[in-house]
Image (cartoon, rainbow, N blue to C red; front, top):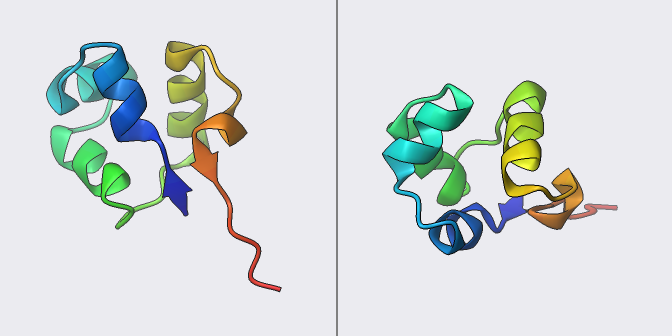
Length: 66
C-alpha cells in the first residue's frame, strides 16, 4: 500500500522516532511504513489519522488489484 506518511511527518516537523512515540510504535515501524515494507494495523492508522487530522484514505493509498 502506498502512503504519504513521510511527507506528512516532515510537514509536522517530526522525526520518525517522535512520530513513533506519539502513536505508540517504534522508529523502525515508522521507517518500514514509510518505505512501504509494512502496512500499519488499523489502530495505528487511526492514531495517525487523528494526529495528522486527515482521513486515513488521504495518506494511505490502496491500489486496486482487480
